[in-house]
Image (tube, rainbow, N blue to C red):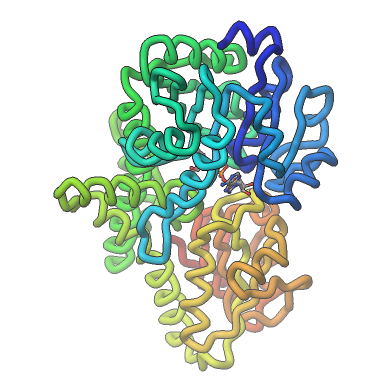
Length: 430
Ligand SMILES: NC(=O)c1ccc[n+]([C@@H]2O[C@H](COP(=O)([O-])OP(=O)(O)OC[C@H]3O[C@@H](n4cnc5c(N)ncnc54)[C@H](O)[C@@H]3O)[C@@H](O)[C@H]2O)c1
């Protein structure tokens, strides 16, 4: 397979061109013939015009690449090496929503030929590719797994907004459904990944490795959040505690914060789901999720308490929230916990203005029914800096005073500012 891909006798198709699929497809298209397939026609049109709908890549990334973008599944008939990079979200009950990954398996199954390969990159629970996806591929194609076609699993570790850790320079885990497939799939990835390949012994090991990377991070942050709640009650500055503890060689450096987005706050539910399915009720993973999900309500309550302590009437309060994306310097608002925080504040009848230089006003309106303000006001009762976008880092006491009605109340969720520089105002950080 690799030789034929190398000689451009066989094409690679990437199914799902989002944060993961598009950079990967373009990286492959530097060397090989690639088909970029996505069900979203509007996004495909943008990519045809050299535009990344996720706003991660510049126009140059599309130049001089051997790639065809299409929303027509017919074009996939020309491909022999399929990579599935569609979303794996959870539904409103926090249960894995496998519709996109199963839908993509139907699409690929319909065009699958003898000798083809299918590699899944979407984050799933251990066993999902073999138990849930392979039967669809077999059923749609009438072919036999591991005799007629082979599969692989290679999780992506890309980090939106991170210009340093890009697709080619992140070490990549690869697993195959047998020895030959592992060799071939590794060779294909190795030709574009400069950081190297780690060959996992089985598909399940690779699936489990990905899901625990993000679960570990979720749990570690949940511990920081629990500490932040405890120390807040004791009037101890958590950031100072972490700074002091961080002087020990083996203290892991992390900060409290809102855990949103498409990965860290979602992937643990995939592991939870599988564990429950096999009769084990996880305690640690779930408690971490609960703590992280409770942070928007905790922070909103602390701000409301602060406003009331200043004798303010909540229904007459105007609060500015700066930042609504799930993390700094990205446009991604999926699963933003700032949106939950804003809803909590609104639940107390507070008038909330939301600003974000990175988020799309249309997407914010569509996803959260919130309107971004074009121009901020000069009479706020409190300002909450919820995301450490680069635009907010240099804001100082004079700025906060200039947009506040009275003595400013500043809630610094990411701990961007130093308390000593916030004199003459009520300053709180997580
Ligand atoms: N975003 C990240 O930072 C990141 C990092 C590592 C792993 N992952 C994982 O990678 C996977 C993809 O995530 P993403 O962030 O790139 O998603 P995304 O939402 O950015 O993009 C997914 C794309 O897939 C398309 N799509 C949906 N269903 C489809 C289907 N049936 N057929 C073809 N196209 C379809 C959508 O239109 C969209 O363009 C997920 O499993 C995610 O957990 C994401």
